[in-house]
Image 1 (tube, one colour):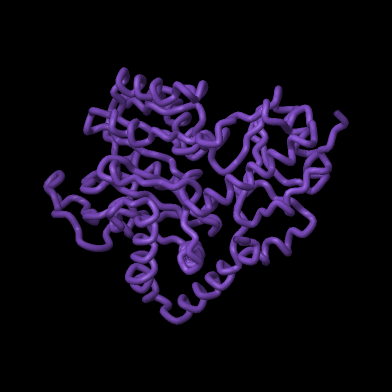
Image 2 (cartoon, rainbow, N blue to C red):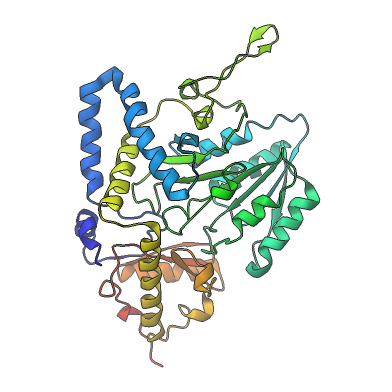
Length: 392
């Protein structure tokens, strides 16, 4: 099935260009434009009453749709925020420790975590234990060993690593290996959600799962969410007025005064006033998928087919740098929705990315890693690599 007709707006605005950065900024389907206008219309209609309208209609629908996609069985545990950094910091604010507390993570986490954790380590607030992701075939065992050795207060790792595309197929096993019930576990699912079929039913009671719409959910920035573990009673210090929505927990006496109350479900991790335009876009995209019988497995099968087509065409180019020998993840079973080519240096990588851009081939890079992402708006005809042809 062809899917390009869903993306005419972005495709028409980028005629003559090949966009291979959907792992960074996915083209938005046309339905998102109408969604933004719908948000304006509803804001004009409801004015001050719009918050009640959003939390009675929009939010429950999105909670249910996301819960279905992840098979959490607990839609009420989904909470929204403008970005995952806000949700991450809210989780970290639950840890009450006078001494530096231990965090076990990896060397391949996105900046939302890496920058914040590094700064907190500078302050002496945490002790950061960093496990290298490479070699990938031993990652899971080495990561579990580090957790067992250090018994941390927080474990944080990605479902799909942003700088390589390596898929951690052992997420459930890693989560279940954490024997200390007081250890908080956060899975960054941003490069997995709506890309790789994901079932967190067996860890829904134990782990936080963070993701959003900027990548493969295709609805742009501003719509992120967390699945909060079922039965969670944590009280984030970083909290906002949305966390009082719904049924509240019983007040406790703190210093002779009633304590701050929290919602009994995932909303206890909510923040404060945000622009709901992005949630309207996300709802429109998820409805579009549902109306057209497109599920995550369908998306994944199509995108991996585009990767194979790309690699077949690339092989005929005999390019000295862009070839399968330089792939960070060669095994398709362990690869997300982008191909990462590891080159010798960051300068070489930057130069190649610039040369590709001159030929209207748009991609992106991190250090010495050049990334090509694929989406539903790609077709075999869209992929034109003749500019890379080298004489054998």
